[in-house]
Length: 251
Figure: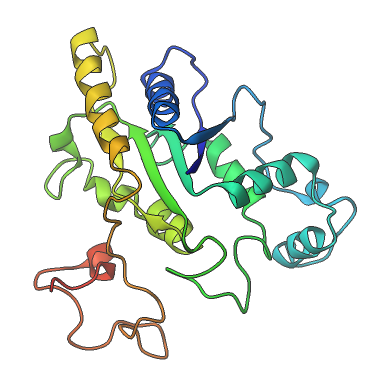
């Protein structure tokens, strides 16, 4: 299996970076190929703009990105990342949870690399289908708060809701099978003992990465949505609401 790790943390001694190193070591030991895009080390440009398109312009930025992709006029940094994505069977996004979302540099990687025509398009199936169908993806994130803070009754809200925009709106949208995230809580002032426990738990997750069950998101064309892309009557587990409605009903 070919794995791509997209890493977004400026501190080489951070927990996020240490877990990235655990992933590289573990996946290589399992015989997988591993590529790493270390965005801070690469000094990745975050802002998506017309400078990415080699003079392709127009009032519709999305369409301009598609024209630049189709005519091989995207910046070389973008094309290099697209080639990595095309080769990868597994993509792991490694980042800290900053202000309840990903660092701007990682959002910029998505904005610039997931161009129209490459990751999505007007006639391209979405949500469970699309360009990255058959590939697997997983979010690995670190958070300062305790696990209890990120629950339905926790002050920060459910972690699954905080990660829904990237898991469902980016990864599932473009066709990835989305694996349950790996979350490391209480990332501040981590003791060596707790890091050893986290690292071992992460190694265990990685050992089953090729066969782990993905999150059961509903396919757009699986029959659960009507012609207006609203859930049909009767769909949805009892008590489910919000983002949880888009998980398949229990069998």
